[in-house]
Amino acid sequence: MEARAITKYVRIAPAKARQVARLIQGKPAVEALALVQHIPRKAARLIGKTLRSAVANAENAERDSASVDQLTVKEAVIGEGPTIKRFRPKARGMAGRIRKRTSHIRIVVSDESQG
Picture (cartoon, rainbow, N blue to C red):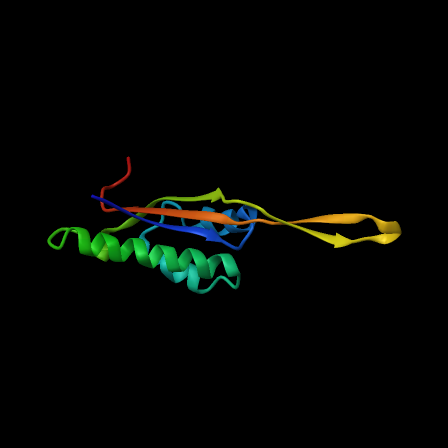
């Protein structure tokens, strides 16, 4: 049984969030939650929130089968969201482009063994 959670339009660059997502992929959900709590990054806080939501979705979907101890992080995908574009004044009347990137975080937890 699978459960998933999606957080959209998060204000963090996808490349920064993918560094944390790679660490939790394939790990048991309990271990992944403990891991993101100890990583001192904004991405870890955001991914942890989405991971907790996915675990809660798994618990609520199947009352009789899904135990938190048996769940593993099947996939943790960070997609690109829309980029907010801003300009900053530069020397000699020019403008420098600032791209404020956003991300979509998708986490899938599963109780099936991978193999």
